[in-house]
Amino acid sequence: MSITRQHSHAATLARDQPAGSHIDRHRHDVHQIVYPSSGVAEVRTDAGHWIAPADRAIWIPAGHWHEHHFYGPTRFHCVAFPLDMARPGPSVIAAHPLLRELLIACSQPGTLPADEYDRLRQVLFDRIRRSPEQPLRLPAARDDRLRAACALVAADLAEPWTLDRLGTRVGAGERTLSRLFRTEFAMTYPQWRTQLRLHTAVQLLADGLPVSVIAHRCGWATTSAFIDVYRRTLGHTPGATRGQS
Image (tube, rainbow, N blue to C red; front, top):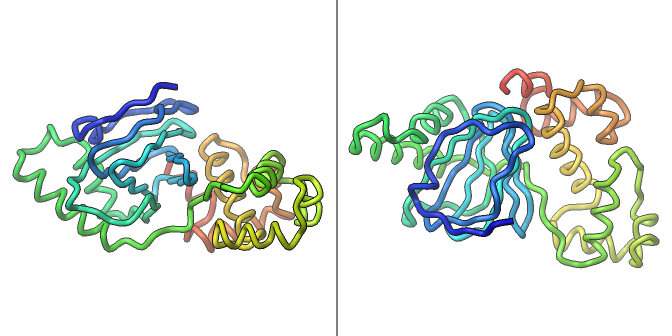
């Protein structure tokens, strides 16, 4: 995999990405927000993974090494911001209609006069700065035992792994694993597992799988249970997400 450092001219763009494609590990000298107006974009860093369907966007601070992965045919928009226009991150934010249109317009700066572009980008940043973080992050484990436990669960989400069984497999007691989930991820094991299931479901929705199949693959007991969790977390049903792609 190539590793590069990119500057502001490469951090602002709009282009189509085929399903299953990716952009190699790199970083920017400027802040960046990325947004898929169709499909799904995922940002991976050493600290974790962030995912965005077409009603979410991902903020990436300057200097963070990251790579992009795409699920389903994706229209990919990126906008760069100078260092004095900052917010904490990486993070996922909601792309409400105004934010969405500003992102699309500002990802194509050559279509606007420079002064108009600067004004639009300032408005875009004001909206970004006021947008709360969305729960679409999968943190990366540092402890080898926790990393191994997470890999076992991710390999087959339909398998009902308990902490006790996981601990036996990775050489850690149930209490130790429970503590590691809380200290490293600030989540309980069931909370992390739900995040992993949702993260995977967003990917599979972009790939066009039926909702019932996704529910089963991701480990929900019923399709209705999947739909309920998805709606409570993302604010709409899985079918609505597919309609946006």
